[in-house]
Every structure is written in structure tokens, then in C-alpha cells.
Image (cartoon, rainbow, N blue to C red; front, side):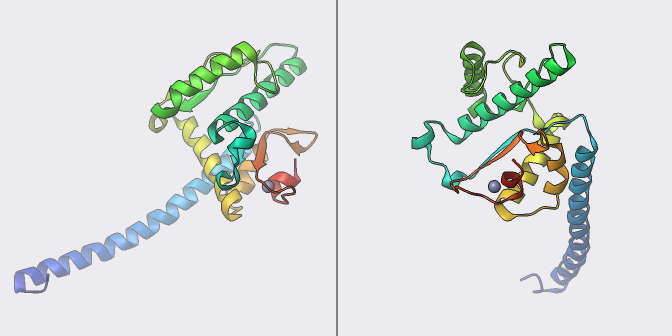
Length: 205
Ligand SMILES: [Zn+2]
């Protein structure tokens, strides 16, 4: 339709030229973006002071009649327990009580629920531990304004690509920061219905 008359023909060529340029630009940006994410993952891997805690749940295999919890509730309770236990261990090692604080990306649908759950954990503990070192309820922030949330998102993305597609490019970097005990991964868990999973996470736990 653009080629109907002379002036439209001009628009057509201009548009075509314009898009042929953006095509190249989009292509480069995509690669640059991929490179950038990879650089971030590498950077995270180099930070020896960071510890990664994660619960990777295969939602299709998740049976909540068995666990009596939703995916999010299980993930939250697991993360809280591992972070708390980590804080207790390093506090003991340093002979000084160290505190932890949770920063969560703001999500209206979960913020109230997680605040309530955290209050319960403070009172009664999780199924694994009492909460002595994590203070407060989670702080909910705008992830666009909070760099650390974006770094956590890169880790989440890397774990997801690994668990769902077996992609190791980003995973191999960030998994170096998984909390470990005697060289076994304790901070990250892969939750499937398989009795034996042979993935990198499961075989290093
Ligand atoms: Zn696994």
C-alpha cells in the first residue's frame, strides 16, 4: 500500500532505510545486552563476600496438597531459614552477633502476605529455625531504582535458564557465590519431583 504513488514511494524507501538501520542497531544492542548480563554475572562471581541463597521450584511438578504451602510460601520459608542459619553460623565464628535485613522488590500482591509471614516467623520461627538474626519485615523497594535487586534478578534469571533449559553461560558464574558448607552447596536448592536429579545443583548438595 505504501507504493501507491510517488510520495508514498518516498516514504516507503525512507521507512525501509530507517528500519534497515534499526535492525542492525537492535541486533547490536541485543548482543551488547547479552554481553552486559554476562559481565554482571562475572562481576558477582568475583565478589567473595557475597552469598547466594535460592530455591528453584519446578512449578509444574509442585504438589501443594503434599506441602500444604504455595510455591511462594515454600520458597520464602526456605530462603529465610537458610539466610538465618548462615547469619547464626558467621555470628558464632566471629563471636559477634551479626544481623540481616531482607530487601524485596515491591509487589503489591505479595508484600502484605510476606510481611505477615515474616511476623509469624519472628514469633514462632520457621520449620527449620528460630529467627534471631534477621531483623524487621522485608523492605519493599522499587526494583528499577535499586541496583542490588537487579543483581539478584540476574542471579534468578541465570538459575531459571539453567533449571529450565540447562543453560550454563550465566549459571557457571553466579553459582560460585552459592552458600556452601564443606564445599557442598547449601544455599541453593533445586526442588523437583525427581527422586534423583543429576543436575549441577543437586549433585553438589
Ligand atoms: Zn537438580
